[in-house]
Length: 419
Picture 1 (cartoon, helix red, strand yellow):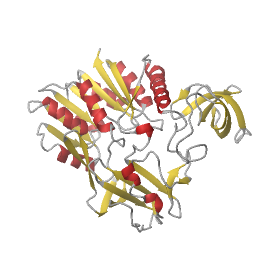
Picture 2 (spheres, helix red, strand yellow):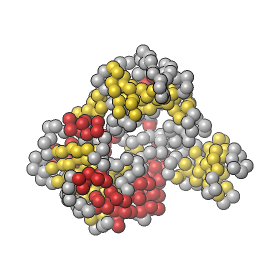
Picture 3 (spheres, rainbow, N blue to C red):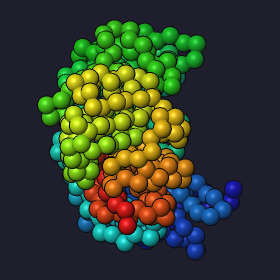
Picture 4 (cartoon, rainbow, N blue to C red):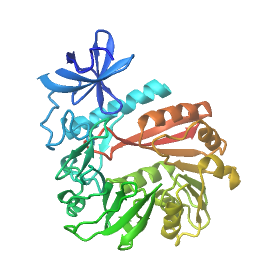
């Protein structure tokens, strides 16, 4: 390691990069800078050095961007909580930065030139109070907080400003949790609360008296939870339909995201009565329910999900829709196992890693008229769009949503059609 690490550099900050960074240069080397904004002059402290680039934190702002604000959270800033990336920018500026990232990834990885607008999602005034599922890390002494950026160290907090008020009402930060590795708090739109406790190896956790009623679940790893108090089942409301979600199963964390994304997916998918639709990585059945209602009894929806608990939930959530069938399996093998050879339309909502080449090829072989791709990572989305283009599918339209204010994350919904 050279002497550059821990050095202070005066930098002119350039464009935003994927991951909550901005790009600067020092003596010909790229420097990825956090806590800065494009156009600023900053003093940055180097935090990491590789053979190709440096990472740094802006610790002093010499010339500020007009988009800069004082972070509302006292735990935001260099060396502090790593949960938020953009607390030092206005919400409008955050959305512009995210739009630039999506456009840059599409251009660089897929050769697609497209103007992108990131839309605000209702339910997060000033970008705060939206996160309905919050995972706290615990110190060895049982204090709760969040990991610092690129670190295992815990920044102890007494409140989280992006947490939903119903999460904060539980008050887990006000207590010690000896023996715990982490504590997750969930507040559902149906009015349920749950606290999921992950113990350290060979340790037990005594749950303190909480400030608001909540089910208590024990995290057994690999997504499995066991109720210790209460049912461990949460209920989410989207329009007129209620969805059950067991334990810490996947659900959109922004209170407005599920309905916003469902509306966007259905608008792009344009399902017609009698059509045959696939919902891959279907979770607890949010999109499958909307598709099934649209294709009607004369149509069919086939959903695939790899998590057993989510499959059980999806089947319960769609029990009034006999045209919907939910099966467990990984997309890589299950389409072949269930002999799925064609579809009129396909909806995919993969994890952050995206689809990958093999799944792209298999989906393309279905020759669907429309593919709707829901993505939480613009880099893997752009990569997969490039592979789909090789198989004859072109990007027809794209919407992006600020489902994670104050962070660098962004949700995209893309429509692809056969060329």
